[in-house]
Length: 167
Image 1 (cartoon, helix red, strand yellow):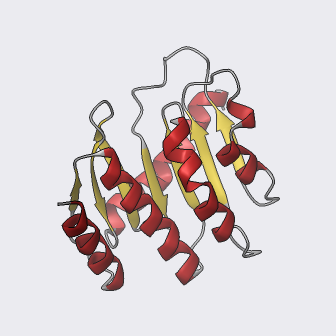
Image 2: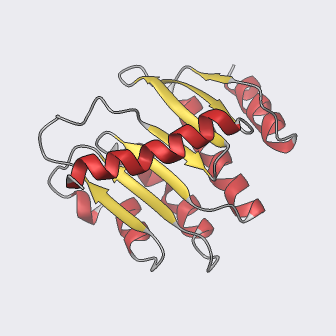
């Protein structure tokens, strides 16, 4: 089953497909994140914008090499929002990798869970995304070519930053 999902994702990526991919497990999320970051690197698309609840240690630790590789390009940058701050988060390798890049930014929400119900997503440019539909079960939808949802998530990122900082 995991092999079939990976083939579907890679095909959608290769063909710049607008097909909506259903993500039903954390393993699926990893495949999607790796491919979304990969297509951003391949196409020099920027920025990558990520909104995470509390930055799951293992999941994002495994993605650190992908982000580091993407950020090797001078024009690349990542913007990350972590909705719920927690101890040690600023030392997380994923966060450090992003913060070390002069073009990238990291935003932290409050320590309470007041923002946790905001959508969790990754959006690459304005048309590639993965959007969680159920945080607890890692269920999500994704696409490699959906400008309407991608642009919505891109703009939503700015609204969440405004809410965090009361701008």
